[in-house]
Image (tube, rainbow, N blue to C red; front, side):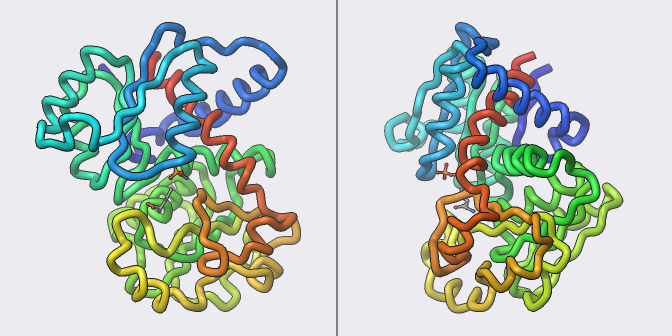
Amino acid sequence: MKRDLISMLDVKDDLEKIIDLAIELKEKSKNGESIDLLKGKTLGMIFEKSSTRTRVSFEVGMTKLGGHAIFLSKNDIQLGRGETIEDTALVLSRYCDLIMYRAMSNDAMKELAKYATVPVISGLDDKEHPCQVITDLMTIKENKGKLQGLNLVYIGDGGNNMAHSYLLGCAIAGMNVKIVAPKEYWPDEYYVKESEEFGVKVEVTDLVGASTTNADVVATDTWVSMGDEMKKEKRIRDFQGYKVDKDLMSLAKSDSIFLHCLPAYYGYEVTKEVAHGKQSVIFDEAENRMWAQIAIMVTLCK
Ligand code: CP
Ligand code: NVA
């Protein structure tokens, strides 16, 4: 049976194993040891949205594993001219050992995963961004030595893919998670309910004031995700007051870290002072995309 990664719930039984494998393979590779565990394997990467990190980290990661990655922009393949997702999935499965998909919608993601006969990895859709949150948890573990019992506070668009995957990912890892967002941008109820099943403290609030008190990790993401551009001006108005700045960071624990999946828009969801400040680990986080995905690909190919 093939195994996909399109929701954080797909790794609920081995999340920490994947994170530990990522940390192990990162160290091995940095020590000059070969990690060519997927020699001769091919990853097909379909992109319906822009990307810097996802594209490059998957491609370089696959090279490090001894395999090969193919970049497939939707507009350059027949999918963009009306070929069905079903046929695209069936055909790519005949060539590729793995498929990475950055999709406009979670429905399209599920459709591709349904028909592909090889593992499908989400490179983000409108509901979740699991590779990014596995990466973020890896980055937290590298910095804190553990995950269980830590407090993550996410401030900004509570209804986007990052917020949903943080809810599930933190809960699976045994971390308490707080989403701070204007009411109109609260997470889908489904993700709150699912995360509560793991017995951690899950909180959703619109009160920014002292929200970062006692936080080990403060995180944010853009106020205008890909696909939300039409409502950019309204969103910027609605999110005033939900910016991560040095005052909010100063309320968090003194050894707290700041995360952002990037791309960042300085002066909106976060100040550049915080994002490039001493508590920020955003560029380690960006690098870790590659190591986390290496571990994910190795795990799904087993
Ligand atoms: N964080 C992230 O997924 O970045 P890209 O959109 O550049 O891939
Ligand atoms: N929430 C953002 C993440 C970008 C990596 C988006 O979907 O555009």
